Length: 338
Image (cartoon, rainbow, N blue to C red; front, side):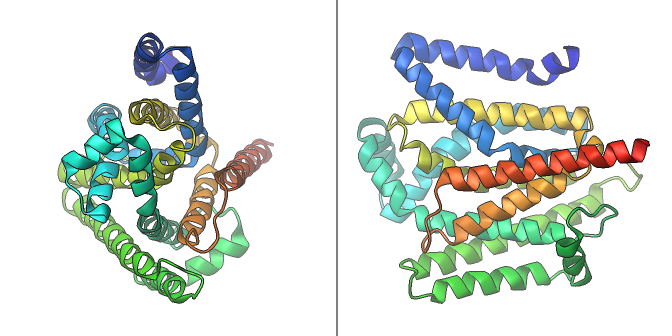
């Protein structure tokens, strides 16, 4: 109970405040919608929590707390409110004030304009996440889960291979006749690739220059800052579709921000809990499962202009892979104990 309160007490307190605000200001029906949005965000972001835990484990306790405090402010107001406004402003060529007015007073119009930006959003996020998955598959490791997939990737590991593979996928998709958004796929996909490569390279460089060399030492200073920025951008890449999909449930922008924000808060608390309880050490294939789930999301996002995959299909597949990773991890641990 002490560990649970330490990790989830902050999230529980803010959730109760948010629920009370919605109940008093908007009513019981709005509260139900908010709870549904929060539950969907939490269910579809478990793989994000696992990836975050793997990266967050490199940071010092101070930066881990910053990830939960300042990071959640960025996640709620930056990623789920300000960033969609900025995207609509850029794609619709409207002032940010005009877009904010649409979001608050004409939410259906705002949702339509956000939907128009969807091809660029999915191309960016898909390319970014595909780079992440390929980088993981080619990294040196002691533990393999699906060896028939991971070992060939490991043998082909070169620093440029994820970049070239992702470029071929993005370029190929942008040339398909079935793709009605060729320009958006190519341009946004290239931006996603470049940003991932730059941020990942910066994170590794800062780790070498300012990170501790001792085994088990935690990152601080600029190395921790680069890792923190990487986590925030990863969260953004995984959250865009959720913001757009939320408009299928409600057009109230405030309710969407609160519902998704509460879900994001619990995802971050779950991340911190897994770091403190060393969950990734106890379930050694969980990190692999999360990356495979992210790979499914990357593919569905990149192919979105050609084949629209229902959210529940990708969600079920992702949760199924993570469940398989949990079960096989447990079985491996029991076998090692014998």
